[in-house]
Length: 284
Image (cartoon, rainbow, N blue to C red; front, side, top):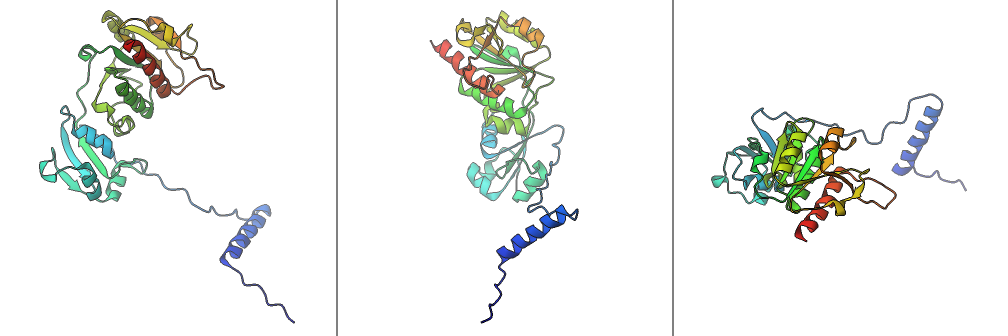
């Protein structure tokens, strides 16, 4: 009796193609084609010079609730408009209903826009003189990543800080990436940018703040260094930490005691931990 040849399934053909491609490559022939080509990236279009583009449901909701904002235009999908619970006839600026692909083209393929883009004027710059009676301030010494700064803004609001102070150079300006990472916090806290950080630390001292630089080589642990009724926590950049001038200017250098195998934290995580400790001290 003659055996019938086995039928070739698509799976069999797939593995046969892989084997042939492997043999071709080993013999110097063409390499096996990639199973999935890389997804093309699109950077989006730049915002007009007088506008900031904010995106994401929560970010846009927080901005629309901020009376300090001046709005120009909302681009939104019908579904996102329903999620925003925004009345088209009572909106603070013109609304245009668009398709998601329009927002992809405007913002780029990496932006998680959730179907909404708000064009608004930048917030008026905050100043140290606007701090009022807040007892807790966070100071960033050239932290450059907008994702980190956005996460720090969110933690600062959560722990009741009155301001985040940064340098006007080597720090992120107001942007959609910063606002999205802050998840609404940019609308709720003073984001102060100063020309000279050492002068700003001196002004904070004159206002009664104890300035504490976070440094892994600090002589004291953070908790014992927390003293007085007004605190300014100072954190350095992602790579280099505090600059020498900043280290010389703060009242004390303190470290977060990290007992694990990893001896340092991301700057946004270090900010959250130190804010928690500072708030407990101030409440106590």
